[in-house]
Image 1 (cartoon, one colour):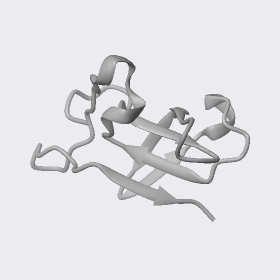
Image 2 (cartoon, rainbow, N blue to C red):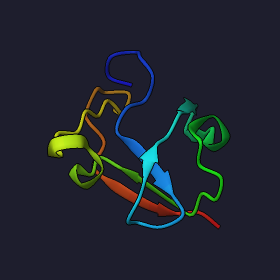
Image 3 (cartoon, rainbow, N blue to C red):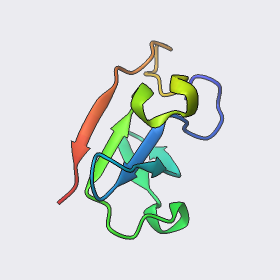
Image 4 (cartoon, one colour):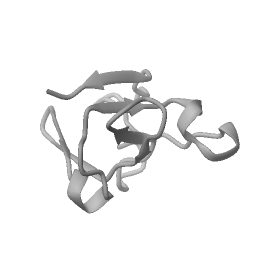
Length: 79
């Protein structure tokens, strides 16, 4: 992450309508989501950097690459 802290700005759930904040870590190039610790039982979608998930439309994100450039918003479907 850009600040060395826990990953922020990552949300997930079973549908796009009601997503909860996710606890996740990055190991090398792999995103590891602890959906049980996040309280998400049926994880089907993961969304990063979306204002739709943030209270008052303000999102705090800190995912970056090795050069320090911020990650673009993304949506993943979990199978």
